[in-house]
Amino acid sequence: MHLEICIKYGKIIYHWLQSLRESMKNIIHSVVLLSLLAVCIPEVSASPPPAYEGRGLYVSYCQLCHGTGGKGDGPLAKAMKISPADLTTTVRSRSDTILMKIITGEGRQTITGRDRHNLLSDAMPEWKDVFSESQVKSLIAYLRFLGNTKHDLMGDPKVGVQLYQEYCQVCHGVEGDGDGIMTKLMGIMPMDHTNPNVTNPLDNKELVSSILDGKGRFMPAWRGILSQSDVEALVSYIRLLSH
Image 1 (tube, rainbow, N blue to C red):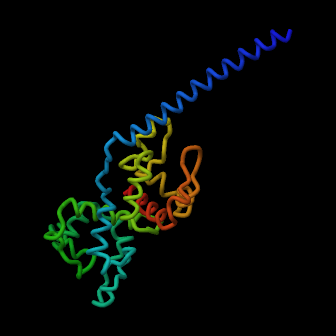
Image 2 (cartoon, one colour):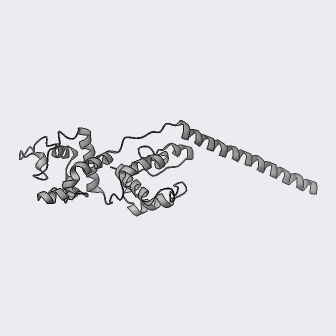
């Protein structure tokens, strides 16, 4: 009787050890694979999203008159006693084609014949010799962001893009659309940061909390690794990814 029990439990222990060995092999295999991925896969950096590049142009050329939030209350406007357009409202009703003509000064209205770049304000300069066509499109993308967003940029997106490439793109993807290299390996579906229908319903505090404290099974907590200002910069960059 004791011999039968010993044989029975001996078989159970044997199979358990075999299973444990297979599990360890899988763990070791995964660790080796991840190490090889980190070493062998070249670092890939996407072109900045249009709204990100447009923000840089806006800060350098437009903010003095139109203000940080685009409401036409910049310090230069006050000093010159001019009234630039409130871009958070006027841009919404205009197509990209008309906005390009307003910014560059090229083209006139078919009805009144008035210069398009003076449609929003008589003091609006022409930028056709300053910006390339791609730069104007990037600037328009940022203007769309100003006109549509409910959320402030709480940090510096220039810092955010670097942090995103270092910590986030492996899962969320180079472009931010949730197709990072780890997604197939782990069978996960990270948030698509390029989809405003996904990101806009979340306020800044919710995004900050998700990054600092993690969310669900696979979103790690970065508290203790990223500072509060780092996370705020990341959130600002994520906002621009969807425009």
